[in-house]
Every structure is written in structure tokens, then in C-alpha cells.
Image (cartoon, rainbow, N blue to C red; front, top):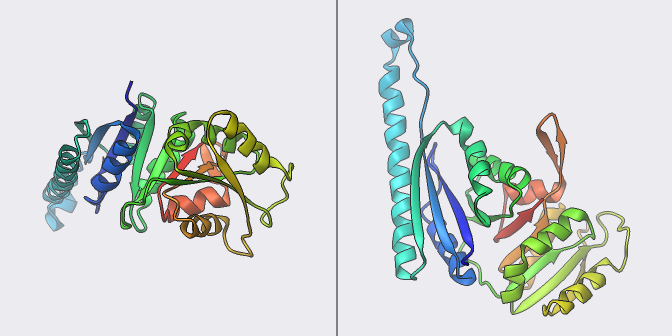
Length: 278
């Protein structure tokens, strides 16, 4: 049974870039997966103000915003269709009207019926970041962040961020299809960012992976005062990794999340594809 990947397409404001198609199809090809593009055409509640309409045509502005969103969704959907057809990747597309404030909840709900959700992140794209965060903590499934403005990364090398925690273990399990296909797996522990309960945790994971037929090596990295997300991604760049695997840290407080530093950092600025799992 082929892996099912959900690709939400944001259309509000600038929306996703068409380069999302390159990343989505590359990952689908690598996994032998099928894509489901969910185009979320921005909708808005009806607004009526007799006094306001004397000053500005509110319905016309709403109509223009909806049309711009639809055009953005059509462009990204077409790019996905072209790229998928070129590489024989199965693709189905669903379009739905959705209030921008409901996008995160909608994507999270539908992500539960897929094996993986792929979220394109653009520069300072708060909407996409919020969607990814909600899906990581609410869907029960892994999320891969892809940096839309960067070239597609080679798929061969995978860097696993490992501290022996529950969420890191969950991420490794969710990343199993990527690990099985990798030509190189590196298990990295950042040793100067926080005290690790088990100094040999990375070696234990390497032994565990070996029993599943995945050869891996250990790297002990130092943050040296840099944000943990930057340190991990710099290490990934240094070994030409095409994927960073890490657990998503968050603490539930009245349904809001206070994110861990590494999680927050990669949500704001992924420099390569990052698989997050909680």
C-alpha cells in the first residue's frame, strides 16, 4: 500500500509558492508515495456596514481577496499537476473554501487520514507555520516541513536529532520509511545544549537501528551558544543531509503550545526538509 501524503495549499495573502510542487513530488518519488493536494481557497464571512460601505466597498474588497486566493490555489495546483505528471507520481486534488482562521484545524483533521503531511514554509509565513504546528501536535501523524525558497535537497543522507526522549523516539519510528531508503544515517546529539540523561543514548539508537537493517553512525555536535535549531541545521548542511528528523516539543496549556527552542526554530526557518513528530 502506497504512502499517502497530504499537501495543504495555502492561498491566503501570498499563499504557498509554486515551488512547493518540486519538493512534494521529489519526496513522493523517493518514497513511492501518492500525493493528495488540498487546495484551501480562502473564504471570508459576509461583512455588512451601511456606514462603512459609504466609505469603502467592503463586498468588492472581499470579492477581490477571494479571487486572488483562488488564482493562487489554481497556480500551485497546476504546478503540482505538471510536476507529478512529469515524474509519474499519482496525484489527486481536492478544493474547498475555508476561512483562514480554520485552516489549521481543517488540515489537522484531514491529516489523520494520511500517513504524512507536507507543509511548505516560505519566508515569514506565519499561516503555514501555524498549520504545521497544529498538525504536529494535533494530528497524531508526522509532518515534513519543506523550505519553499530553497532547492530540492538530495534524499540520500538523513540526520536524526537524538536526545533519548519520547518525542525523539516517536520521530525515529515515523521516519522509518526514510531511514530504510537512506544511503547514510547520522544520529546526532548536541552535547553542550542541555544535560542528557544517558550519555550513550546515541550509541544505543545506532544499535537499535542496526537490528532493523539500518546502518548509522554517531555524531556529537556542539551548539556553542547558537540556537539549537541553527546548530542542528548547520550540522545537517555540513553532511549534505536531505532530511532532518526530530521530535516536536510542546507543552499544552489551555490548548496553546509553548514550543521548545528547536521546534520553534525549524518552524520559523527550515533550511532543509525537516520531519517533526510528537
